[in-house]
Image 1 (cartoon, rainbow, N blue to C red):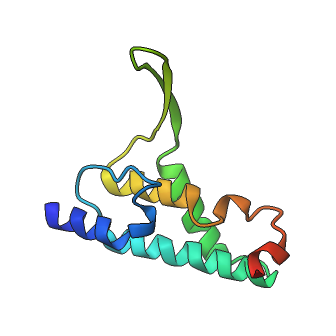
Image 2 (cartoon, rainbow, N blue to C red):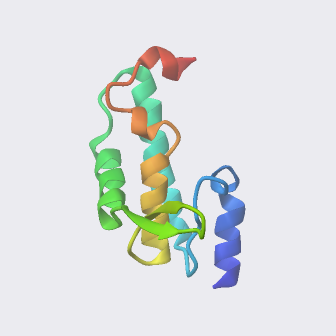
Image 3 (cartoon, rainbow, N blue to C red):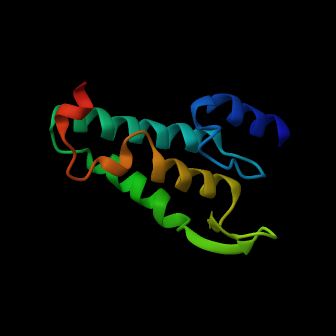
Length: 117
Protein backbone atom coordinates (compact mmCIF):
# COMPACT_ATOMS: atom_id res chain seq x y z
CA UNK A 1 0.00 0.00 0.00
CA UNK A 2 2.66 2.55 0.97
CA UNK A 3 4.64 1.95 -2.21
CA UNK A 4 1.68 2.66 -4.43
CA UNK A 5 0.87 5.82 -2.53
CA UNK A 6 4.49 6.98 -2.78
CA UNK A 7 4.40 6.19 -6.50
CA UNK A 8 1.26 8.26 -6.83
CA UNK A 9 2.85 11.16 -4.99
CA UNK A 10 5.97 10.89 -7.13
CA UNK A 11 3.84 10.70 -10.27
CA UNK A 12 1.93 13.86 -9.44
CA UNK A 13 4.65 16.40 -8.60
CA UNK A 14 2.75 19.36 -10.02
CA UNK A 15 -0.34 18.35 -8.05
CA UNK A 16 1.34 17.82 -4.70
CA UNK A 17 0.60 21.35 -3.50
CA UNK A 18 -2.91 21.48 -4.97
CA UNK A 19 -4.29 18.19 -3.69
CA UNK A 20 -4.64 16.50 -0.38
CA UNK A 21 -3.55 13.04 -1.51
CA UNK A 22 -5.85 10.77 0.51
CA UNK A 23 -4.56 7.96 2.69
CA UNK A 24 -5.10 4.50 1.30
CA UNK A 25 -4.52 2.47 -1.81
CA UNK A 26 -4.51 4.58 -4.99
CA UNK A 27 -5.38 2.99 -8.34
CA UNK A 28 -2.69 4.57 -10.49
CA UNK A 29 -4.21 3.21 -13.69
CA UNK A 30 -7.44 5.11 -12.92
CA UNK A 31 -5.47 8.29 -12.18
CA UNK A 32 -3.54 7.98 -15.43
CA UNK A 33 -6.74 7.30 -17.39
CA UNK A 34 -8.43 10.40 -15.98
CA UNK A 35 -5.32 12.46 -16.65
CA UNK A 36 -5.46 11.30 -20.29
CA UNK A 37 -9.11 12.38 -20.54
CA UNK A 38 -8.36 15.80 -18.99
CA UNK A 39 -5.41 16.27 -21.35
CA UNK A 40 -7.54 15.22 -24.33
CA UNK A 41 -10.27 17.70 -23.35
CA UNK A 42 -7.81 20.57 -22.92
CA UNK A 43 -5.92 19.83 -26.13
CA UNK A 44 -9.19 19.65 -28.07
CA UNK A 45 -10.42 22.89 -26.47
CA UNK A 46 -7.28 24.57 -27.77
CA UNK A 47 -8.33 23.72 -31.32
CA UNK A 48 -11.84 25.06 -30.87
CA UNK A 49 -13.35 21.70 -31.81
CA UNK A 50 -16.08 19.86 -29.93
CA UNK A 51 -14.68 18.16 -26.85
CA UNK A 52 -14.61 14.35 -26.92
CA UNK A 53 -17.75 12.95 -25.30
CA UNK A 54 -15.75 10.10 -23.75
CA UNK A 55 -13.48 12.60 -21.98
CA UNK A 56 -16.41 14.70 -20.79
CA UNK A 57 -18.20 11.62 -19.44
CA UNK A 58 -15.09 10.39 -17.61
CA UNK A 59 -14.42 13.79 -16.03
CA UNK A 60 -18.08 14.22 -15.05
CA UNK A 61 -18.21 10.74 -13.53
CA UNK A 62 -15.10 11.45 -11.45
CA UNK A 63 -16.73 14.62 -10.12
CA UNK A 64 -20.04 12.88 -9.46
CA UNK A 65 -18.40 10.02 -7.56
CA UNK A 66 -17.12 12.26 -4.77
CA UNK A 67 -19.01 15.55 -4.60
CA UNK A 68 -17.35 18.20 -2.45
CA UNK A 69 -18.94 19.79 0.56
CA UNK A 70 -17.65 22.49 2.87
CA UNK A 71 -16.81 21.60 6.45
CA UNK A 72 -16.66 24.38 9.00
CA UNK A 73 -14.31 24.18 11.96
CA UNK A 74 -12.60 26.28 14.56
CA UNK A 75 -8.84 26.85 14.71
CA UNK A 76 -8.93 28.26 18.22
CA UNK A 77 -8.84 31.76 16.77
CA UNK A 78 -11.05 31.79 13.70
CA UNK A 79 -13.55 29.81 11.67
CA UNK A 80 -11.97 27.47 9.14
CA UNK A 81 -13.50 26.08 5.97
CA UNK A 82 -12.21 22.92 4.34
CA UNK A 83 -13.44 21.08 1.27
CA UNK A 84 -14.24 17.45 2.04
CA UNK A 85 -15.13 14.62 -0.31
CA UNK A 86 -16.58 11.23 0.61
CA UNK A 87 -15.18 8.03 -0.84
CA UNK A 88 -12.13 5.86 -0.92
CA UNK A 89 -8.66 7.20 -1.70
CA UNK A 90 -8.86 6.69 -5.47
CA UNK A 91 -12.37 8.12 -5.83
CA UNK A 92 -11.47 11.17 -3.75
CA UNK A 93 -8.24 11.85 -5.66
CA UNK A 94 -9.96 11.42 -9.05
CA UNK A 95 -12.61 13.96 -8.07
CA UNK A 96 -9.92 16.40 -6.95
CA UNK A 97 -8.03 15.97 -10.22
CA UNK A 98 -11.20 16.36 -12.29
CA UNK A 99 -12.21 19.49 -10.40
CA UNK A 100 -8.95 21.36 -10.76
CA UNK A 101 -7.27 19.76 -13.74
CA UNK A 102 -5.07 22.27 -15.55
CA UNK A 103 -7.50 24.76 -17.03
CA UNK A 104 -10.49 22.45 -16.67
CA UNK A 105 -12.72 24.87 -14.75
CA UNK A 106 -12.30 27.30 -17.65
CA UNK A 107 -13.35 24.96 -20.47
CA UNK A 108 -16.90 26.29 -20.46
CA UNK A 109 -16.88 29.47 -22.52
CA UNK A 110 -13.12 29.39 -22.88
CA UNK A 111 -11.30 31.94 -24.94
CA UNK A 112 -9.26 29.81 -27.37
CA UNK A 113 -6.73 32.63 -27.73
CA UNK A 114 -5.73 32.14 -24.09
CA UNK A 115 -5.28 28.38 -24.52
CA UNK A 116 -3.05 28.64 -27.57
CA UNK A 117 -0.63 31.12 -26.04
